[in-house]
Image (cartoon, rainbow, N blue to C red; front, side, top):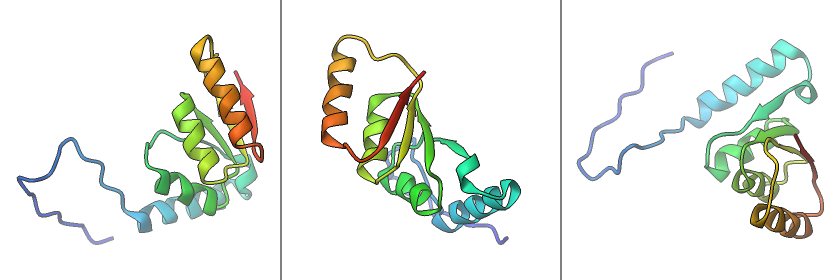
Length: 112
């Protein structure tokens, strides 16, 4: 693969996240080829970019693990069918989680 060159700019806000959609799609395909079925993959979704998460859902991934309610909401917004929340929501976080469940009733959620 040819290298990609970025022109540096003094107007960039750093640190910056640079996403290469073609590389992401290639990695999705490779992972699915390795396991045979995207249902066997539970993607740990860390990128706080809704379009990146939408690409996972569109790429056939159906199970995700998140470490905060914001990540879970972003996945619900793009139609992720199965989200595992890797912490126990207590107090205000439990109230927010209940609101998210009401707002996005179509998906399935789990807690650790």
